[in-house]
Length: 473
Image (cartoon, rainbow, N blue to C red; front, side):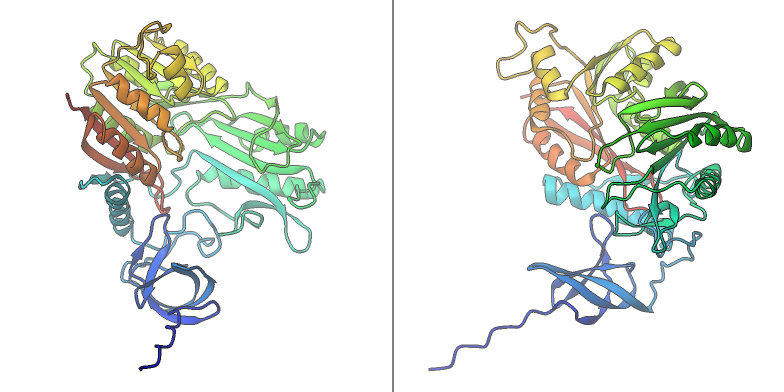
């Protein structure tokens, strides 16, 4: 009898050095190569590169490797503008031609819809960003200590949430943002202030968030620290003298160990604690911890697509689920008879109501609470139907703009039960979009079209607008 065949060795092992041809970008922006069909995700590589890489992690169905050197660069490689590209975990694709960035993002949308949603549809061409640099109106920076113990202020090293490098200049933030970082870092060093240590949980300075109203030029500086300190008032005065565009300086303090750039207590050091920006012809007042789209110009493109999908004539009642500070609700209200926002954040609802009042928009109202509970308890969209609910909800169109995790299954169930003729889904995550669209299309809806909006050039992130139409049974 023939001897049993010897076991086939795995094509890749940890510590192995390989020559790899990079085929594509996987979801999330990882470079993808294959060895005898076995998938290897490669750091610091681009499609079209041939690289030498060392495997640092091996799993059953894939491996991960780091590029040691590029043997043959991709034809799509370009010279990055920022000196931090090899280190920074932010805009990792500055060295990839922008047209190629858009092509990969469109393919990402199409593949997520097909593989996760079973929906074969070609996305409309992605809306490109008119500005490839200095487009972010908000940036969060982290304080830390370097190997010598000196305070640093900057961004996270790629792949390490506990390591920060000193920022010289960020090319996706507005120019004044980088200047404020340098000023504040030097001031903190002169005052011998300490950075919070995530291992010992000691230290004063944690985060710095800088917002700028793109249309107003107003700047907000929001400092997050473990406790108050007399230095902060002196710093606030120095900042406003050095940078006249700073309209307000805010201090957030927290004792929590969680690494979140917010605090339990908020104190205004200079100004009124808010700034303003204009989006879609509406002036929004922005508070330190409220959500506002971080790319103002592209947010208007996103809004235009959402309004196109809603196809409002002025007589409709529209429901906006996950309405935030009203960045969609208020423009919708101007184009409809009534807009109803549903939002869990009390702070966001307060801001939305204030923004509605200051813009003279009286046909927008907001309901505070978790979406699945509001739809069930306030609007009666449960298994028993809407009879006997406080409000019998009848709407002509729905817009949803959930966080990256997508829609709660109960929200999808209740919106299917509602059966609005038009439903527009704004998504920041094509994978959860594909999953959720499948549930809508298996029930009562048909997908009309989907289009990406490139809110964040040089990153793997892409926003989408998907338009659904009710299919009558």
